[in-house]
Amino acid sequence: MAKAAKRKELDFTEFPPSSVTEFSTIVCLACVFDIFTTQLGFAPRTAYSEIRKYSPTIAELTAPKAARPFFDSDDKQAHCPYCNAAKRWHARLETVRIEGGKATDTARRALIKKLPQKDNQFQLIETKSDKRAIFFDWLDTLVRNLDLDDAGWLLEATRAYLARLEPKTNWNEVFEGLRAVRRSQRLNEGWEREGSRLFLTPPIYNEALIVQYLVSRSHVHGGQTLEGRLTLFELVRRLRYSGYLDAKEISGADQAEALDAIIEKLAGGQGKVKLYHIVDRREFLDKVKSVYARYAA
Ligand SMILES: [Zn+2]
Image (cartoon, rainbow, N blue to C red; front, side):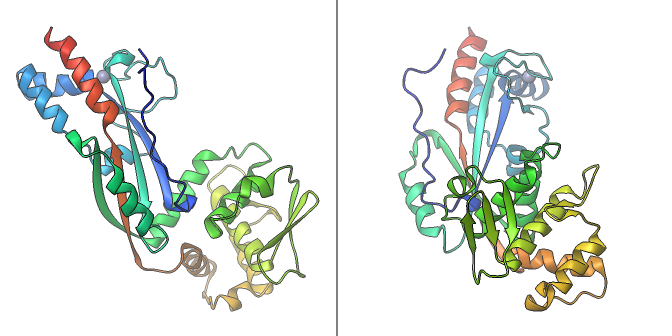
């Protein structure tokens, strides 16, 4: 049954959108109880208190492909793919990952302070990563959210990149009814919307092309961009002739090296990044309780 009062959602409006990544997975408590009682030999009561303390790893919570006892499904009536247990045995675990840094530190501290402490309803996990890995994570998420068979994806990918570049702008509004994105030799900085067209300065336009290339390179008709289909050779040549490589002080001996240096620029340099994960265990704790009540009955 649905809960009478809706859970209080966490508020991330103070954070630049690109600094916050949300993950969601479902854990099957029938599988978990089975592991603790059958495989590990715990009595149900012990299993219950152990499971309440159980904290999944970041890898389990954020894996693109879930493994037992976790699974992913958008179907509200889905059964566990491992043991066929129905919905009442499932608990959703939501994880929010915040990139540390000047843009987020104050808001993060304030948010964490407000979280309820009781029963570890929220679990905090800190990890370290680097800017390059974060960039590829962002790219992976983008690829998963785009439909590359839909012609609109080039604009969507452009919008996603602009949102990463300029998080404070309301890009949904800027892209409303937009039909085309063009390079502008006239603009000195940023972007400008004119009618149904969005104009970008050459460097930003080039970076949008790079992102489009990276998004589509593993797709069947790889290398699609607003400038048509490009091979890596053509992309790098285009960036060289437009002055982008010189402006960014990128000198790669070959295409692969140049691409590597370009990606480093897009990622924001080398440097380490601290990652703060907030795991919402509220539904998990509720479900463990109700499942145990049924289990022990
Ligand atoms: Zn199961």
